[in-house]
Length: 277
Ligand code: SAM
Image 1: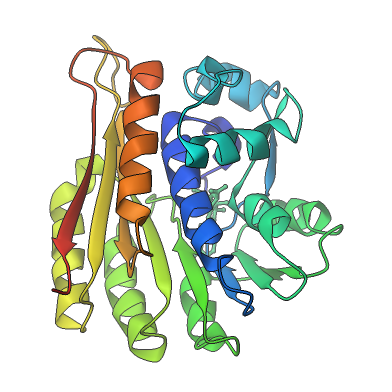
Image 2: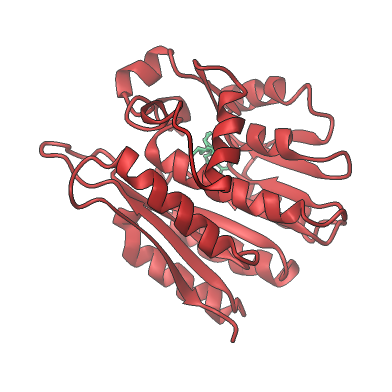
């Protein structure tokens, strides 16, 4: 486990993923009934944008830093930027912190992290949030124990680093089984777009497991010359996207794309893989 999200926090892919996360959370909060969030690959929760790692990679400078003070049109984008700005100019919140700060008294979050140092930092980050708990361990193994949540409503975020060759095999074992246990949950599964054919195969496995509503929001910021292996396109598989999630994601992505674009080939899309009629 060499992956450290400190190098990548606040890059365009984090921005895109966290806007989707905020969109799902705001829909869950439309009803007073409690909900649960399970974050299987949580990371440390809060990242310093002036750390050696962030400065060396320059990814946040090419991501959130480009539009931190932008005044958005999209209400979803406004909510996301208000959330990010609430941690000050030198910090970027990760998914468990965004969730923890969004929860109401009746909601809860289980944030799972395997890397011991990241877990220790996560536990500290979540201390002020009584409804958010950090769990140390393997997100794929621990997810089934969390499902179905007693609240019967909720969100599962699966955000692996894709550093292991068996990542898709593990997703293919874990997610269809999770959906069988908690069929009505909203699931957000992040992936780099260079693995598109593996993502299509996973989508097929999800449909075979009975998923009827599957959305694919993607963002490609365009390649720069000599960019090497630098990530330039990423997406999400969203199982059971809430009502109007697609339109809200489309509006936010279209608005943000010109601010993040690295070249003329940049584009964003929100496509239905399957939709109940
Ligand atoms: N979700 C976070 C966010 O949006 O702020 C970023 C997570 S980062 C992409 C992936 C994290 O998963 C890393 O912190 C890594 O240590 C952790 N990790 C790797 N394999 C894991 C596993 N099998 N179970 C749980 N965590 C894992």
